[in-house]
Image (cartoon, rainbow, N blue to C red; front, side):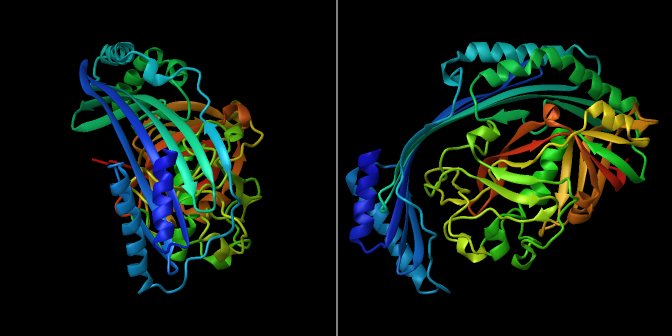
Length: 485
């Protein structure tokens, strides 16, 4: 890998690039799933290639190749420089990078059990067991169980002399029970919707999820939702479970703090942002108990946004985003950091593959835990709703007005969780919603959830992000009924 990278750097420099960096990436993916007792997906793929990014005449150029011969790598580097020179003709200003020291390092995701060393038969047996347990529940129409694994071996090198080797491992699994009856579809997911839980760890994650042990309950709740009352409408106090709160963070905090969206250089998939530069350090984003960080460091936890170095060779960092309710930070790159007066990148640039250019991406954007026990929080809520597990979401292209639906809700009356409710939804305005937060559960209820499929860019890149959250309470929120007949 080092030799391939050096070929590209030498050619880029010889062609006149003032800066160049190269990523060589060897990626391996495994996906398994079952549907109603049959194999749904069983695939394994590998990809090896090189991407070279350059600045020439003050503009960016990028090219990639999976033909790793000297000739093809030289051609890719030369093409990147040619693209940069062409882009320079229409540039508004020169690309200037915040300084970063030369780094030589090796980093690896800590794992106990390599998922690619676990026999596929063993994995499929576990999925079939969970699938069967869900189907034992009368009324379950579709039982689905899935697992996914990724290993990325990457070498980064730059004309500044940095050489960084990283090996990142991701694992994930989940269950979904779907019940169709009387023209209504209900579903329950475990441990989260949209693929379950995902983390930077090994097969030990799957063993700890106890998929088969939770499968029947998941099926029973999906069927029971048909008999449940509809969620009441109006303004209510709500408590969001940690998984739903993780998605709330992702959509209403994570995307609007991406500095490329703020500056108008990126708008695909999630639009731009209401967080204009003049609001930094001034906007009251949430109540005083709301503290949010973007933390890619290993000590934050094994999130999908955990790494040693980003794809510009910048070390993982913890960045304050919201401090005591006030908006104080963006996600930045080496190029965008100077726009907000920073002398260093926040280390958030990542690319999906060797043939994609790095973009500003969420790392682990997490709500710091509070002080409450969940039982005490419910007991302190005279009347309200406890909402679990995302089912749908919608948010405008500046990340300001939103609506979320969850799979299930539980009514709270007199400080006790009572009847099950179906088809709940809630909506609001981002800053009003976060300012209505008056209680957050403590660290023992905090989970670092993995979102494996965050889309951004054109062509689209799918990237994993992490979101830590504990259940939290919000007052005077507009609640409605989703999926009304």
